Length: 479
Image (cartoon, rainbow, N blue to C red; front, top):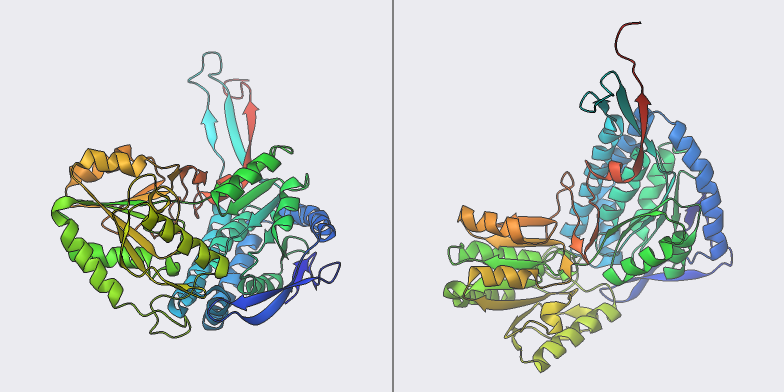
């Protein structure tokens, strides 16, 4: 596939290409251009024209375009789900579902394009301003660069591109290196729907593409989902041009299981939240499980039984429960983290082995705070269970992390639930459900090393627009 610059599908300026591999067997399923600095520069120049065209486009027309894209995604959901499965390695049911979620996201932002309202602010609360009025209006930022990760590429990209366009911006997308194909396919629907040339562009390639976009003075905002290390680098570089930066970064989500929890339902949620969703490669996956000692043994047995029954294999097979990690580097990184946990005193209850890009669903006990399996984000199917005796101490352990994306509590005691909600330093607290959940109409994002700002259909348009105030001095009263 080619990449999209200024309304044209094109190769890289130097002709370089990157292979796209199926992580299940490392077979090549396509190639994409490896964009150069010259390609980035050309794209940013085109985006200036595209931004002016989008800012002049009425909201009803933006609605029509995004709604048309949503319909085209729905019409091609099965085909796109298969393509995403082959390039990403998630189960076919998951990738097909992800494409459907993307259609909903596009449709949601289409509607919100018509509801980007300002405010009317009477000033009679201020002495001497009783006869004055202020109004505010929201305007596009200009050019937004969307940097997209590999784990849920179509869904996460949809928030950035549909939100940016709904707010009247131009958007340049930097695709994930490992799985750019489904995004490129959907981008064709966007061109067919009638976007102005340069309003949306897609660049494929490596980190140097993202770095060039972050450095460019012609880009007004970076919207990025990815690792915390990458987020820090973006903030450092973006500071040179004072551009806006929205980051959704890593997580080490804690789940607190109380002694009144439904053990069987909790076990189901842990399996789904750590093993069978995204093959464990989710920023908000279940990463640390703190279990009240009275139910610890029963929960460990229930989770182990379910893990033993999981089928690992070809993600295109509907019977598969767990597919491969995105590439060999990712699988080897998880393997090293498990080995380190064992060296630090942890015990492997089940799993623990790597085969090519596949890593067995793994349960660890004896994990202590400070070891990487507890303190760092493990981006793969590894589930540590740690017993606790005191609920307040469990809350403290959950907060003892440089991350703060989401957390979960399993309990039917409303006081415990509200206490967790009060003190956990995270973006979302989930009750009696896995943390591996994201609802597109809710604000999503984290605190501390998990990022800044919030992303969601009702929030992103405010992140991707700017507010201007008109102060009308002494307009009330007699002539």
